[in-house]
Image 1 (cartoon, rainbow, N blue to C red):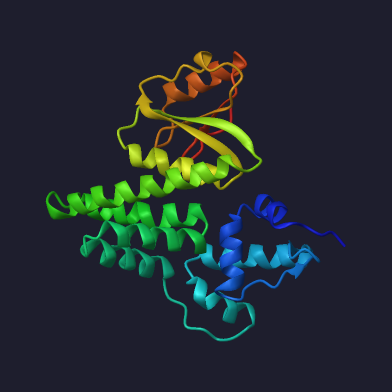
Image 2 (image 1 turned 45 degrees about the vertical axis):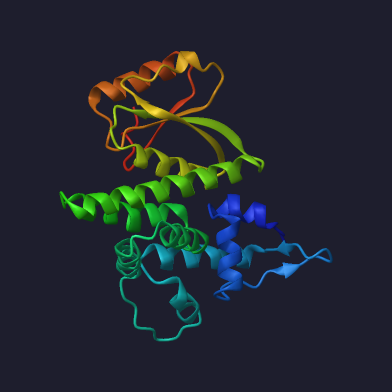
Length: 249
């Protein structure tokens, strides 16, 4: 029977070890064995259970209700993402930066980065962006806390084994989206450095030998797809990352 360390499981399942520990300690979703030295050990059944947990959470089920569902209980399931969005809005209305940072950190320990970005933070930012007055200020407050947390996660990921890469923004104005994408990549095993100023046209030749991700925040235009093809033909390790991937050539 195959045995995996928490690092192995994190890489295999695309889940931050901090999140796996929270699922175990706070919610009782996992029961890994322990070595004599106290290190967690997971087997293939644990891997299957983690994938099932991911599916439930990804569908919007609150993490606190997943255990009952796994055990076959009848549970009233509502949209957990909407609940988390409202929780963030409630904290924002208190206009206390420290409370916002604490809430973001707590959610980051309990949920995968991609789910939080796609189902909580982006919808909340879109909602706040519709208002020209107070909500814009609240959105700026949220953005500052998100960038702060993303930078914290990037620093932590650089202390672990992983693959180094550079993230560049390509013709975008929303710098917060760039940092959120960096956070997403860092939870996928990448040790990310961010080129903080977006570029009208990235120049991979200035960074020889480095793996490069480019982020546009929207699907690539035809011109951008052609440019990506040109870079690859020249041998530059450039990869597009974003909400939608371009069609394969």
